[in-house]
Length: 96
Image 1 (cartoon, helix red, strand yellow):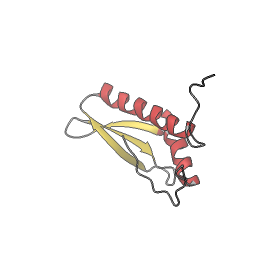
Image 2 (cartoon, helix red, strand yellow):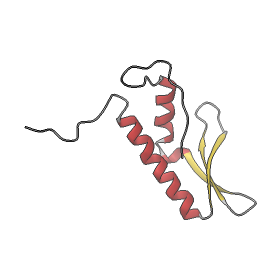
Image 3 (cartoon, one colour):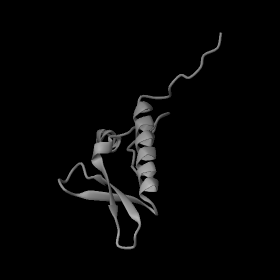
């Protein structure tokens, strides 16, 4: 799953708006997601719109319930990583 966002200015790191950061924080929590079954038998993943109460935004469709839940879990990990990198690259190894 990919959400598209726009940055306003560029330096060595893209400048992400507070609105985008808040969206990432919102979709990184599983309680804001649900799975619905469509009339064609597919399962659709949706997240709760952070700006409108009782409004859901559809994200992806899968053939099985398990596939839909795996898609949500992968999305959660994706947005948690994005939040971790907001303040720049993470040091993973140093050399002496």
